[in-house]
Amino acid sequence: MLCPEAGARPHMLWFFRLVAAAALVAIALPLTAFAQGASLTVYAAASTKNALDDADAAFTKATGINVVVVYAASSALAESLERGAHADVLISADLKWMDYAADHKLIQPNTQINLLGNRLVLIAAKDSKIDWVDIGKGFDIAKLADRGGIAIAGADVPAGIYAKAALESLGAWAAAKPKLVMAANVLRALALVARNETPVGIVYETDAKIEPLVKIIGIFPDGSHDPIIYPVAATAVTKNPAVTRYLDFLRSPSAKAIFERYGFSYLIKPTS
Image (cartoon, rainbow, N blue to C red; front, side, top):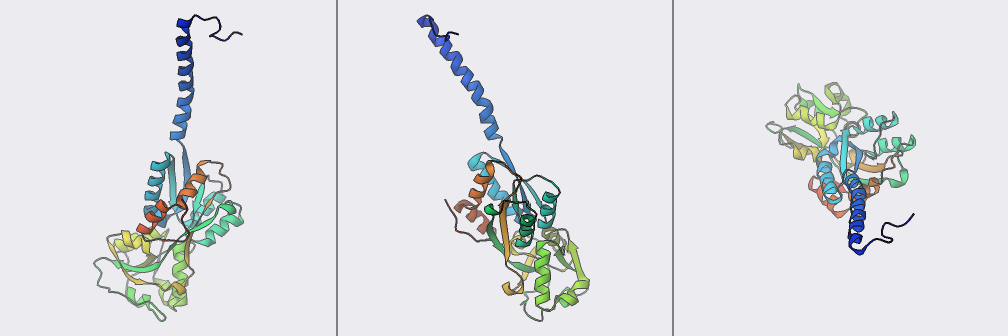
């Protein structure tokens, strides 16, 4: 078969070249649209929501890759992956549930990084008459709650696990237990206090700082519970090429600045 240009008159060459160029543009357009429509799905601990929303917006602006996030308790996220739900990245609020995911082959262990740190705090409603409390051995949170409840996340949720460990180490668990109001996740525990449904609650510092209807009235000593660490990893099932770019972004100075603005400690050295 002859090339279209073979034997063509000179004044016709421009036509063939124009058709060829148009064909190339037509092929390129769907590829460009695909790149612009690229996305990835992240399963993330509820307590990361505000900071991660900002970080994801910055990532999308820089890359054009959309990030769809499912926020819930780390336990619920890991168990959802185990039941076959699809996500590309898992962000847990503790090492326990990331270890669970690793043990059940739900993540790629070589991609795991321990990204963020947080603190556990005692909160009350903004208009509460309860003042600052020095939390230490002998701390009586049950007395502080008086006739009301103590809002914490559920027993299998990281924030609830940290809270229980802290109260046990301080000798306050037995008295506090009858007054506990368990929430599905830490943000719901925060909301119980914000709505004055319980006089006090135990949540992460980062969540308390962005809720205008509560105030921090005490900080639990670091030694009263395991360090609060947020690990991140790619899931075992993902084949999404955007995951590498996303994990690289979470390690960047830009991400570090966003997370620290929300009160998280950044546990790794950022990379360019």
